[in-house]
Image (cartoon, rainbow, N blue to C red; front, side):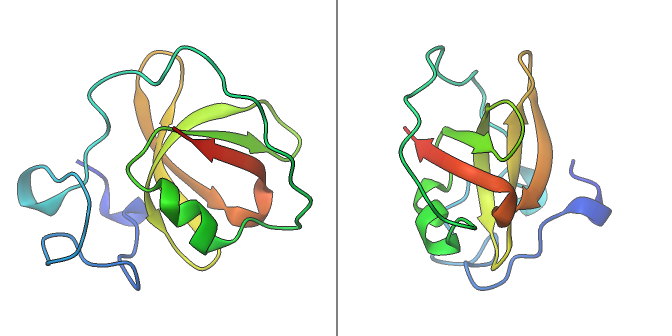
Length: 114
């Protein structure tokens, strides 16, 4: 279960349990992490030259394995379940299992989803 304090605010993209919301849901409308690890190969980093990732662009990666290259850190696999105006939240692969996390879109240098 996701603690209430870090549960994403389901705003413009939909409400779990309502028509049109594309999420994978568990009991009581909770979003669930993927049941398998991400791909074993890291994709090539696409060229980008933006100050922040557009929410509309990364929303195309909702509920898909997504590789994130953050500004000033190593890349990682992510499974986004919510995209807001300035942030994204979902499940991050730590090498062994998925953990819920979120961060600002302006901290992402590039991303690609598979």
